[in-house]
Image: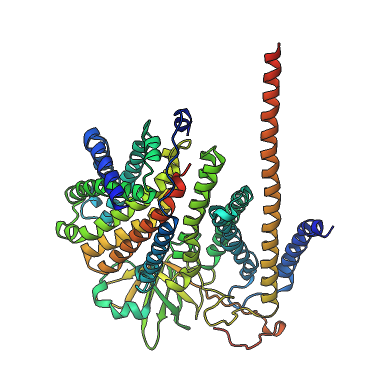
Length: 219
Length: 161
Length: 240
């Protein structure tokens, strides 16, 4: 299972590295969304706004949706499905691999967005650094949940528009947990409480994915 | 699906290595899932999802609150309600002698009355004062229902929370 | 004969119970000491919410689990899950509407960002997402599998909604009937009317579910018949 996971994760990351979709499409989109958040708040409120952590996670969610679609599109290219089927790969391993690859991509994008938030929204740098572990775990949970929901919607009619409807309600608790622990890192408060919740969500989504990914992919 | 159909003569995929191994893994994963949920439940459950803070809680951390906007919950003390031109002023109480004087703007809801629990959105007027400047009053009614004319219905024990 | 009796009686009994609820709730039961006539919403909103969260969503979830379990996998389970979820959407929307109507005069607001209200709204979006997911796939087996998995994932929200009023301090009131220390907070005729309303709306669910299920079966049959007809026509064209 672990070997399959590393194999799949390596494959996905190599594809991402060579196609540079992440670099040229997803990251610029995220930065633009962050700028739009600043514009929506207005010049008087954009700097050091209490909404900063929430907006950071909102933009991250939008970026995640794009990346889930991308992660599933890679799987749908001609020949991939049949070769995965004939190789007899463990579906749980495939799930873990895709979730790991997505998590790595999200961590990279998250760092860029965090830097953007510090620069544009004047989020305190020290607080942002304190929030890093919780952001890493929350993005990990997003990646696990996203891989599951990506597989649920992949292939059908309009899967790109279906994904947000199905995934965003599931992401809502993660948004709350991430936002609260980020706010706690900035202004003091229950940092660990929310960090634990994100970690539990990560474990829960990984467990559900390991159990059910095979059911979704079997044909 | 269509790509699988068009591929000629797919040799059969070898059967899963052993179903018992898969079953043990499922059981293990479910156990981890149960543990995770228990861990969540033992965490004192996400206290910051609370809709409001009680008078007691607010007074306990009065110093750190400053003039931050909060939602304050307390019971309206009888005899303290004064209707003003812009709203109402009254005293909300917690347990014991904990109480906060509220000056609220905007018309209070229909059910607003003495002895009813309310949630007031607003902030303290200064960093140290105990006067609360309310922008909205929400009535938090209880889950018990008592007949207005008790003679018409029989309450088995008569005691209602 | 007896097999036919129960389904036939379902509709009339439902209507009688709902009419009884309306009569008791609007004319017979007394006004509440605090809420006055607003208390009469207690004979609608809790029962509708009960059906939305537990009866219909529960039916959809159990049917989904039974579908995924290989020993009980059948198209019947898939159809039941689909139909129950559709009814659930209706009841969740009704829950939110009746709650809103009750909230405005009592709390003073139509909507509050309270744990129970927010999680119920999210459940509504999840139920709509389930229906959207079903529309997106044409392959029956794939659609059934995916929607079953999604229904189970969505059902995690139901216990959260149920316990939200105990776990967190919410504007929404706590339980009246299923209280922690098992004391009923409603008495006499008001309690009986509440019970009648719960029975009435629960039966209404099963009535609607049955009608929807039969509609689904006819729809599938009509689809296959029209396909057969089209094929026959096409073959006849070829004969010339």
